[in-house]
Image 1 (cartoon, rainbow over the protein chains, first blue to last red):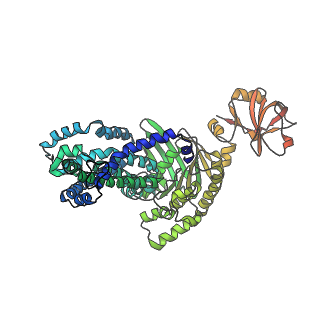
Image 2: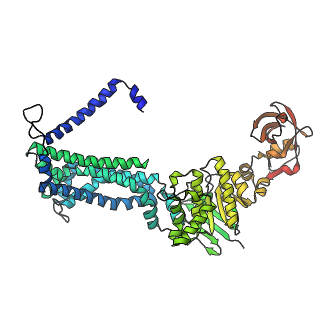
Image 3: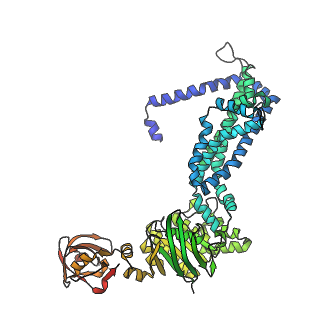
Length: 264
Length: 329
């Protein structure tokens, strides 16, 4: 690969690096802004400081929002694990024909734009038997549907890679019940696929704004809603918030990639 | 008194019958091979015996007990799969010990039994490895050890050698056979490879389209095929229809005839004149394609020395002894 890179014309490198620069520039600007004391009428900031980060990380409202985001995301992921794992196992082991139906079903959350579906959800859950609009519960349920395609795909690819049927047959003949075989033989082999999909969905959900703002808003302020509410505050402060958020998600994505590489 | 007795076994998926009315008797300690082309129902029969696939009717009696209503976990049957089916998350040691764990055999006894069985398959140095660190042949030996450690009443082998390369395959089939004989284990082996079947088995059940076409030892199957399918599947029989056979043998023949290619002699004293069309060197054997009286025959001759090789186009005399001519339905 390095050989091919060396021979590739300068033009190609130029395109790639300038694209990278264009993508990184706003982020770099934000980073610098978050570290600067003030930066308004000059080319470079007048001084560097940590105070915005200190202010941010000692702000009780921010920490609460961070905690709420964490809680809602983890709850949604836990829910999807608890529901999807057994479902996938049953589908691929007992009803392999249903896989086609599941694949369509799984894509539904993508088919409807978030703004449209949130309006529908608002009407549905504003009253009626389950008035959970404005509570974290609706967010957990909604995030669950967003995470569903990622989780389902990752786990089902993983399942296909392990020759489920023969492993189950072998375990059965050695005396294991179906539950025991699933727990001792199948589950440990899904660990990596699970971890990767959980980390990726987490990064994705952690930054979710549309549903969070429309369905719950400030009644249960999550991180992105907090950022939105702070938009009129000091730009340095919100920059520190954006960079903190970005680093956290970067960490998650990096962890997911690491786990993915271990697999090969 | 047979050890395993299958009576009137019937299996179908929807309207498609995989096999119907399978009957066979297997003695204790016998090595049986189910031989047949793919799709003949041999693997399904094996899975039915293991309990992994349900049956629609009939009985499977093992040591007098009907297995059909018994769950696969309780049948006491060991099975080795073509795909090895080793548990990737467990070491060799843990894979082999799995069955004992399920039987709640604990501590030093379990350890001892795992050690013994790993010695049997010559893998004691690999106990700490994971399956992905082993070669195909080693994986299959682990799978064999795993199915032996629980001391099964019956061992089923579902094309265990098909995924391995030729050299490992030959070595492993001898190892399987010697372990089977050492343990006196009643074994059913499924394969589509006639050589494997002939070399390993006490008896071979030849299957086609859901039926056991012929059963018997290797010699019977090889020298006395029951019908045209058996003759076509085993060896490289020359299958002639009644017309061609009559023309070749200069006497009226009423049925199809099968002649083994190595039973035809070529040389000066033969009574049938023929001409060599082509020849192929198969190593120790030279296979000629010879046309005689308008019939094309395959003739195998031992490759004794290069001087024996007959060139294509050469005229030659053939001799076919009467006992080499096998009439098949």
